[in-house]
Amino acid sequence: MRASRVISRGVAGAGRRVGRGGRVAGDRLTRALGGEQRTRVIVLLACVLGLSGADTATVGAAATELRQGLDISNTDIGLLVAVTSLVAAAASLPFGMLADRMRRTWTLGGAITLWGAGMLWSAAAANFDALLLARVFLGAVTAAAGPLVASLVGDYFPAAERGRIYGYILTGELLGAGFGFAVTGDIAALSWRAAFVVLAIPAFILAWLVARLPEPARGGRDALASAVAAGRNRLRSSARRSGAGAPEGHPLETDAQRLARELDITADPELVLGADARGMNIVSAVRYVLRVRSNVVLIAASACGYFFLAGLQTFGLEFSKSQFGIDQGLATLVLLVVGIGAVGGTLAGGIVGDELLRLGRLNGRILASAVSATAATVLFLPALLTRSVGTALLFLTAAAFALSAQNPALDAARLDIMPAFLWGRAEAIRSFLRNLAQSLAPLLFGVMSDHVFGGGRSALQWTFVVMLIPLAASAVFLYRALSSYPRDVATAAAAYRPPEPLRPAADPSGEGTGETAPR
Image (cartoon, rainbow, N blue to C red; front, top):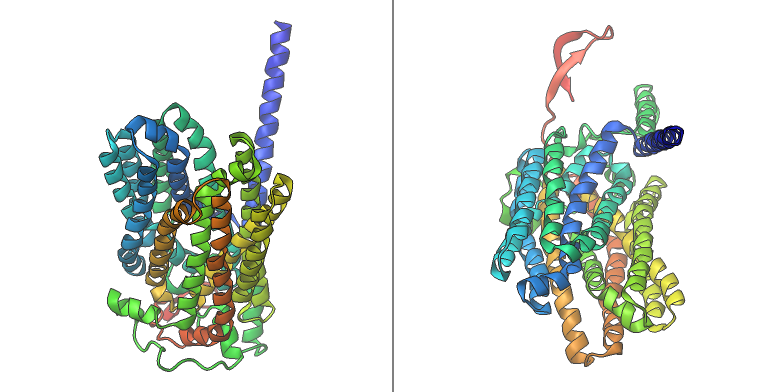
């Protein structure tokens, strides 16, 4: 009896310590993200991308079990991955229209509900054709993530910190892919059907939580500022009321657009929108978005980066085993360490871009991304040529850090060169081209390895070396964008801005006057 009481007290004490540790960690995370409401939004949007990444990774992690259970080949596995990306590319455009016109939180919640249904459909597939049809359906509904998340980030968070916020949210995508590779991959070893069911259950919970988020005002009028940012804004407002400081800009103006105005950068008169962007049909929107030079360059750079990343995700494990002569367990550990480097790069890249902008470098986010892309290209080369696993691990981790660091700054930069009411459609076009590049990468990597370099141990090595060319091209594109980006920011700032809604004005006593004032 005495021994049992001691054990019970020990377990209870350990439980209390774990609970206290969890609360402390939660409090620190909330403070770091700027408050409970901001934390809730960031975590849920990160989970949206994480769920999508986990689903894609699960197909690759369960490849062996799928081949055995459905009597299919590696080509069929590649088709399952490719068809999801191709359908998602096509479905991005209509979701972009919805992102600019419909209530986004409800639309995204509804799409995630359909994700869960699609995952259950995948788990119940009796043969390859049924599973392929389920993946087609999943590709169509997962396309909602790109344009809806981008539009919500633009309206939920102040422009000056969007790079940092994007870093947090994109980290969710990396963690989700890791979960799909490690956790559901192990579950798939017992049953590939169970792996899809495990992903479907949290999908329905996430859908309910996302649908309950408040819908932010368009154009970032009601951005969720952190406590520190709110204090700075109050000081700026006091300075303006006292006549100090720079003239106040339009409330929909981003920090980059305000800086372009203060630097007297001239807008491109041929691209200044003179009407409400919400009235543009999809053809007109696509034509306009692709006329903005910096946007085209940023899309091309992003597509090149994701092309190489998709090839790395598909063949990285096989390359590690053949190049370094290690087993599956050690190769997985190598990729885990490299993944940690990628998470660090994602978090750091957005912060650096935001800080450069705060210091007055209008194209700071582009510069941060260009330097990161250059570093990634340089660092991957020795990692691919060495036969030492220790040396390769060092260079691969640094290269993954640099490769991931460019994405948050680029995502934030694209919002600054587009009018706020075109954010959803502009991101849909980017998602279309990104998904297209991701869907082609596994096929092109495989064809080059098998038919150009003839298979064998060195085939993947030289395939990766050659595929550094598009990665280097992404850096070249970004350096070219440094010259056109400031003018495109000024052009977006000069676009037509819809009249602001009116709200009751308050007198000094805090009681309503019955009058209205701009919001």
